[in-house]
Amino acid sequence: MNYGETHGECLFREVLEETGLQVQPFILYDTWELFHVDYQMTGVIYLVDMPPGQTICLSDEHQAYEWFELSQAGLEKLDIVYSSRMMRWDFEAIQGFMKRS
Image 1 (cartoon, rainbow, N blue to C red):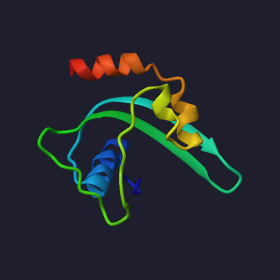
Image 2: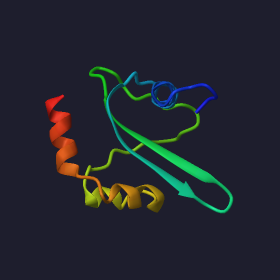
Image 3: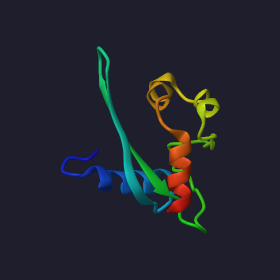
Image 4: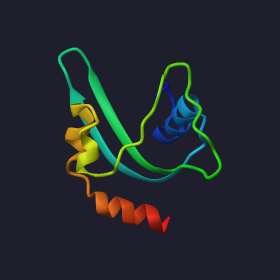
């Protein structure tokens, strides 16, 4: 986050910079903190809508991206820092919510 920037503003800016997508947030879903000896990480997780007709265009900071299944099996592809927090998510509820929106 930039100084003075809200979480929502950071979400829009970062997604646009990294993927070229102009997403719309549905809901703030989860937050977490990771404390390490040398650093601290804060996760602020939103459920978002990928606008129809837009194509992912990665920034020069990335070489590739991959979609993964929103399930326990999909968590195996993630770093333990993220998957350990997502293990408690209710994937069926998320999928049901996203279909209604």
